[in-house]
Image (cartoon, rainbow, N blue to C red):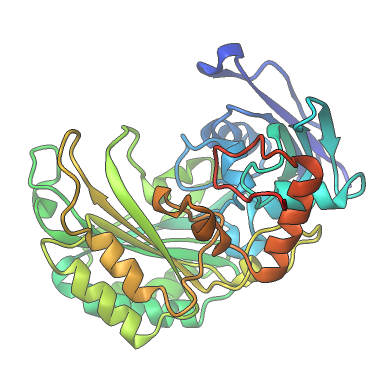
Length: 384
């Protein structure tokens, strides 16, 4: 198998990025990238697309590659087909607590490799990753946008879509209450809008989404066959920073009661600004070729965000927390890719892992960082 080699490097000081070296030898059947810390996904997507290849990038081109991958990495374009970004890492360069720079592979140290991917930076400072690229040049992707008054019909149609989804389909449904401000399109100002965002690697995309298009009047339809270099357009995440409070909930299923809760809280003007429900399953639910610490037993991940203007007082009522608490279930299960600041306690982090995974992470932590040098994070403490 011929391999494409792609190197993307961060500038000293971390301001901006450059691509000083770019070498390709490939037949379109496989690829590999080496990316240093500080590089954002947008650069990797753009560079790989020139080779007819694609990484398992997230929704925003501004997200850093390394931090995203160390939590697992949920691709909005191909995740259900190929799994987490962490599942396709071949090597990790890391500075461990003893000050040594190491190149860790599944063969050189399977325990350390396991803990680095999904362990959220608990056993070292990662300086570079090597990971697979996929021979995908284009895909059927984009979004459908509906008025909030049709939210129930659209959510039901989305539920049916996900129930029958093959691994080629990666999707989410988003409930957005836009502010009543001049920069917002007039038809969205101060109103609830529902988006279904998807990416599909099959050839019958229009047939697949026909029931969604028929569920309610479509305000905006951007679904089309697009080059993989344009995948940021699927979510069209904002590029400017903002202040908000966010929470997550992991769902074992999209039950009628869960749908009722989502509809009830998003329908209120006092509800969250944004609720994003992403279907996992597919390859997200299958073991990685090289074991890592990323959770596999989640069907849907829900993200609730409430915008809080700078300098505003703390929320007297946090609608995102109200929603995620209602959906969390008896275990309060969490996921290393979906941890909010409110989850940063030891108890909160513990919920991101099953028992066996957490105990293995503590064993590796005790071996490689017994003094807990790397503790300003979603911390997993060593054994005493």
